[in-house]
Length: 136
Image 1 (cartoon, rainbow, N blue to C red):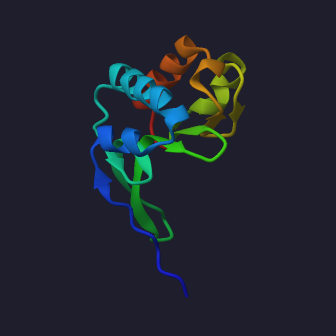
Image 2 (tube, helix red, strand yellow):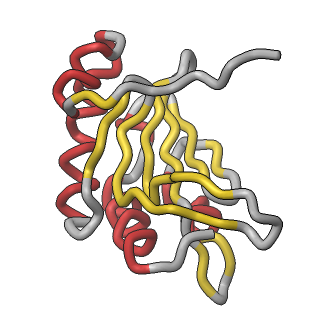
């Protein structure tokens, strides 16, 4: 049986500094964009993610844990922006897919190679909508 890996809290600057060189500028811009468009979501960085709006969840089954309303993950192939939000129309990120540009979008995840592949105005709107909506 393996042990669950635990992430270590670090400063946002430390997270960005530890990222691959080709991702640092994009992470800085993303952090600024998220903070500007979701100022009520408290930013927290760990050794694995940049998170905004930490919350505790508990399912009817009893399973519970901690998550972020918005989180950014640096992957081997690029970046992932997870937007844990939905409303009466469905998942917020999924609705923005046609406007975001060159990205793969799932129900709550936007995956892209470079920030320049995305339409930043639509991305800012997605962040604002995620901050306003309930979590999914």
